[in-house]
Length: 288
Image (tube, rainbow, N blue to C red; front, side, top):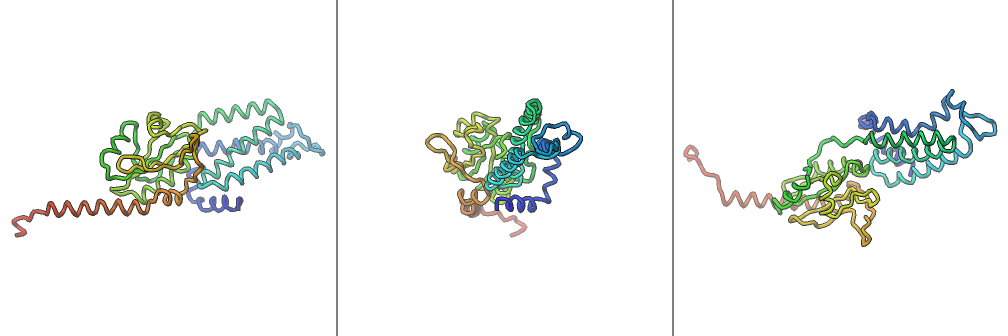
């Protein structure tokens, strides 16, 4: 199943996959991930490489390289068991391929290892993964507007995502959150986002750590009556995030979105009917 699941996800996402792989981030990342394979297998580059094979063939993997690559495959399959989107599957492959390449290059020659690490660092600092640009019904807050919006109409239930653009988990969750906003947004139930990497005051106010080690990104917070009711992931007594999978099904179930949506529509429907009774339309003379 660990192998079949990524393949099924790839087939399902194939129609929209080209939009992602055509981005420089994915092209360069794929090149870095496959760099050792290319150098080891493509002549005449491979002919100048050292080898520990008994037949002395420098253009084929030796037993230690095969061992490292097999271990990489096992790690990727285990990590992909918890992946939700195709971006997460691809991201795991890229990340662990680069780790394996680093080990393999240092094993060949320390100079090649240092060059590869330098290239990876330059890539990390200069090339960012593409942001989600699809349809959504989400309001983006600043450090000043979020509190104002929460207090503007206390009848409105808000679901707010605390995110950071550098977080791969936030980027993977973006299309899921956008789809939920399109499905459940109404006058009484709204969706918002705030970039705590850009507005650190918000992270302090709502106790969401932007540190990669905290694993609190993304964080979804449910506000009712202007006050926080629940959040995911939860934080334990030691201040660490409790592991939680950000699937669409989990968000719908944990936040009771179907019930919240029906209640929100009912509240505003009853209010509109009450206002209509209190202020009946004035008939014109022509109608009389």
